[in-house]
Length: 190
Image 1 (cartoon, rainbow, N blue to C red):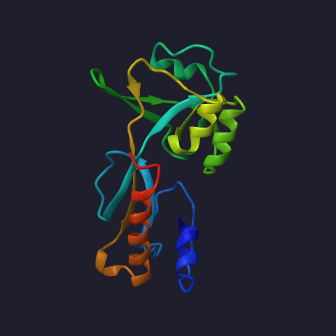
Image 2 (tube, rainbow, N blue to C red):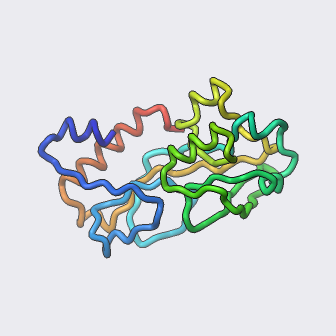
């Protein structure tokens, strides 16, 4: 989407930093942050605009997991791949049981989601990844969704955060509006 925006508006310059760390929009002098976080997320002093919800799944290679999990605690029996540096827990929700967090100890931590994805395909460990990234591998049987008997990973929110609407440069406002339209048209919207 960003490449399409740049091709459409060739006179606008972008600086894009890709990170999983929390950023301070004001201190770091950023126009906005495009975020993907579990929903709902903590309140903040920034303005947010939601683009869509993204489904995430706990997945593994069939080389690693042979049988469905009977309990969430079985996660501890397998190596875990994480793209979160600080918080090492996954949230799960169940229609009857409510919510539960599982703390884990990662075998691999990387901000590069594609490394985590490829490592899961290779059978290195289990990971929570977005459905849009998994589609092809699930169809080909390279990855499988780990069945947790009614427990699911909550949907994640794809949104933009900025300090205030008045502080946005016209080009930033244009990009946010462009992304809003593109996410609405995309196949990741649920």
